[in-house]
Image (cartoon, rainbow, N blue to C red; front, side, top):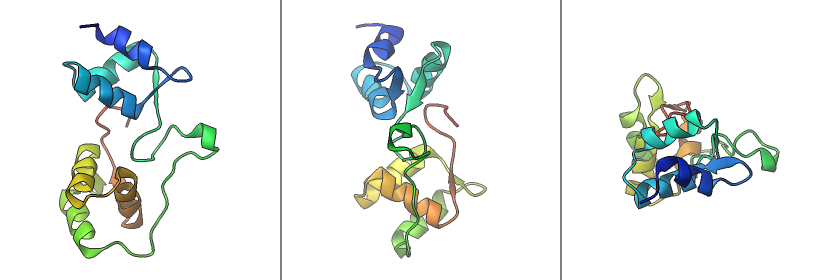
Length: 127
């Protein structure tokens, strides 16, 4: 198996590590999100293209991809508010809620935005 530094450096796109690629490294290896994030920090590699749409989309001329909905379905509202701690939903919880409801991660992030809930902390330690 290759080491984490080599894995990260080989996964770079435009000198950054896309979030999805970081998680692919974890499924291929024996690393945790925190380990991948810490190693990326050590290498001064920035994470890009957050799967929740929060950052890393400079090529789209937007800081993030979040938008708000006119209405968030009740079952999603219950899930998001139930996962919130002091007005924030952990990234890992947002991913879990997306899976439970069969929705894209970005849709859950947009629902959280509509409800005024922040997403934090990031599984990779970005925020």
